[in-house]
Length: 379
Image (cartoon, rainbow, N blue to C red; front, top):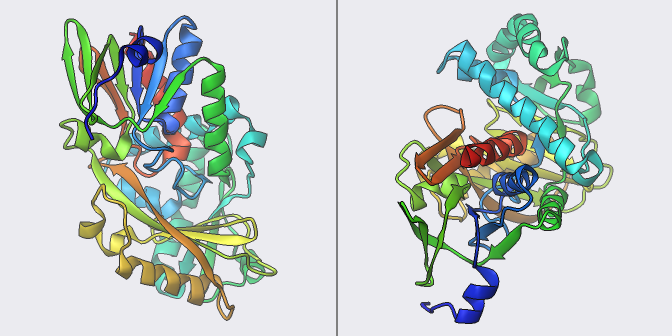
């Protein structure tokens, strides 16, 4: 559909915008709020293509996590220790920024811990984690202030009712949030700060020049603003030439309420590729992208039957064995990944800044990435 803006629309809604933020997810909202705190007189507008933030911010599991042991060990196999610890520090700082900005009550934040589970076929991986636990507690404890953050809690297994799980490692400072309440609070905070949010506006192209940035919409009309911050994470490759940001789809399900549900907390499995938690007496379970990486490296929403079958199998045989569990609904989210897990926060032209590639840790790192992006815009 093509149409032009009327004089009234252009004068009333899009005149005198100082900074346009593309994307109203956690990064875009945190950036816009931070811009207004840096200079309240700024006219800040968020342009969002969906009726809601449609990438990952409202489609994740709501884990306030920063790194299970097997994930971090896997990261150390692909990068230096300094690089891995720097990313962990950003995640931890980001979680604290989120809690400060939104408030624990508005997040429905619960520090129930993050568990990593090991089945009977993963004894070697568990033994490596147990051996390296003092090292991890020392180095990551310096970041979190929890010197004994990781600990073995096999004694809790009977209480959860899992089948085939032999070991549990608890990361004590991790927790869970209610993603919907988090995003509602951020939206409210942004509007209270005077940020203008326009939904349903898909951006086709950005052209930077000495006169500012011309934003071409898929409706055919354009607007020119002095500066732009791009915060679309997994969709960055669609808008800009960014080969270091690869979209990745994740499959997620939620069950109907389960009577006498024993599970409480956030759980990681298989280097974090699978994850589940309790919410409102239900199980939310997702992941499995590693089972079909080629098909899931996409920015298109949609089902993957192979992965969904695997998630149902995990639910019925490990998480809730012997129970009649009914699935309420499925959805998908789009992540932004890359060759390394460090977020990209940089100027790609004089007036266009990007804050993308959250590597599946948007809840943890998103607020900090947005704030650092905002500061770079203003520099």
